[in-house]
Image (cartoon, rainbow, N blue to C red):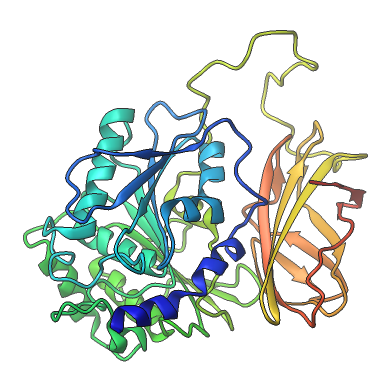
Amino acid sequence: MRLRSIVIGAAGLATALVAATLTLAQPASAATLVEVTNFGTNPSNLRMHLYVPDRVQARPGILVAVHYCTGSGPAYYSGTQFAQQADQYGFIVIYPSATRSGQCFDVYSPQALRRDGGSDPVSIRSMVGYVQQRYNADPNRVFAAGTSSGAMMTNVLLGLYPDVFKGGAAFAGVPFGCFATTDGSTWNSQCANGQIVRTPQQWGDLVRNAYPGYTGARPRMQLWHGTNDETLRYPNFTEEIKQWTNLHGLSQTPTFTDTPASGQTRTRYGSSGGQAPVEAISLQGVPHNLPVNAAEAIRFFGLDTPTPPTSQPPTSGPPTSSPPTSQPPTSGPPPTGGACRVGYTVNSWNTGLTASITITNTSSGTVNGWTLAFTLPSGQTITSGWNASYSPNSGAVTARNASYNGTLAPNASTGIGFQATHTGNTGRPTSFTLNGTACTLA
């Protein structure tokens, strides 16, 4: 009955993963998701799927992307932008799949909450070891990210294996140890309802006691939570902040606060920079089905550094234009005539929707600062957004770049999006203009 509760509580997440997408579809490449078997010790019989982009860095980073209850690795691959980010930056993505009833990860048993104690964390650690050995991966660039059950597992992995994982991004999770049970149950109602409140020291001790004797650095953590989370209540966000700031020996007082997008409050602890030890983003009015901002997670990890491809580009036939021999210009006019392409995907439910937008600069010049103009269908009203600011929230809308994505090199893309209410019309805009220039629709 308790297992049924978590499945019911997370049932909406299967729909949410499309809503969480920040791109149109699968990355445009020849690379595909493949299943790996016999990857090592696997006490809980997890399945492993692996995405290796066509062009991989010489010593690639690794991201473990962990799905929600009722989900799977392939579903998380399809429903998030992590694989597209891997195509762009040359890292490798591991997608574990839970196989028990309800497809939730074990973040509750005594075995799962002790380093090398057994269950899912040991299986996932084996997956990481397999990729490290096979692809000569960089041990200093191993990260985890996940949603709901996957966010809880992200907390667990970083707690148990601080010597393996250098950072994590938890989208709607709970602190390490919060979901613990001792009676075999898979559901902790007190934790889910935000009723477990501890001091920062107590939360930190839960993690320290899971790996006694460890004195090394702790992973950096990025936390995301909606204020209207109906499945894992919002107080869990505060408790996560307590835990990770304590593990880093930091004050509960933020060193930096800003509003990266409408309805979002971002706080950083221990540093004001983009890779602070702890970064927390609160999403006003957003339920459990929150958007997965893959680009911001990858930025936080520092995996967003392009490197030359490890294989040579095709040499058959002369190029249609000479490649640049120096850095692209840092200033210049916006693209003209057919110089942009926009992809737009909508995921809707009763009275709400999310829109995921991909903007591509198809011109030969660099865009420095952009605005994307479009008209929302009647009855749609934006309530929150990511990676851009939106004004006004209905009718003829202009999206303006954030501080970190205003430059678009030739053929570069950026993903933005928003959540909105609707009165029945869930269609998409019919035209878009980038800096006043009409874009083609993907």
